[in-house]
Length: 283
Image (cartoon, rainbow, N blue to C red; front, side, top):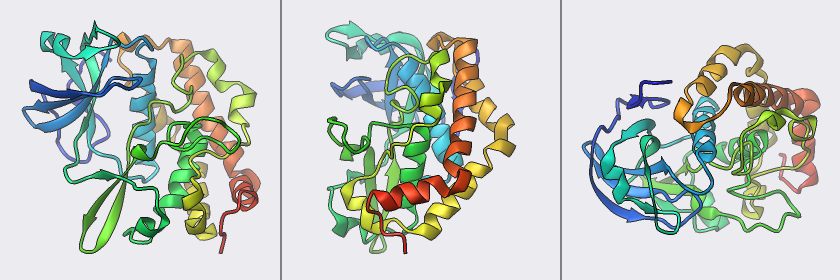
């Protein structure tokens, strides 16, 4: 894709064109910068980190899939960064590289989930937890809650909440470790050990009392639609800018992974039985 500054995956017309100032740079693996644009505040993930551009590609495709899957994702787009991006200090003194970056609209008043079950009781949509666990398992996303037995810490900051009318709304952010655990996207993505990975991802202990069989079945039905949505999903992958250096073979493997893993999880209600084993309440 050669044309940037294109809104991708947003229901609105949100498409910032210019960065007015850089407000803060977060010292994390992808060094996101909170910036003020001509269309409000945004979190921008540029090229230039020591992890390379592939996690940004995972962020883009993961966010597109999350939105397609019915999860609430903040508006996002690909934004072309010019020379002002060199002011973003990243990667132990390095500089952001001008070119296409992933931009996500800042949701004002959003706060990270506090990790309590009490706050989850106030969600306006009580199917969202089951759907999020299925999504993270489908995409093998380690960056919210890794599978049971993994020694990586959970990351509750990747679940945001906003309030209104006495209810809370959950927002899904940070898909940069989908598919490849933050590593390189290559032909190995579609290996059988990945497509048929039996671990459950995204299942915080506090989520378990809110898992419901009827909501899981709705999510499984969405996974079954992947087979008939190949053109749409292929379009998500084709949206990866060439500057992010994901090879055609890697793109093909990623497409195969998304489809094959959806089929694996939806066959024979596999994910329902797996969550029963993990202690989910399947009433």
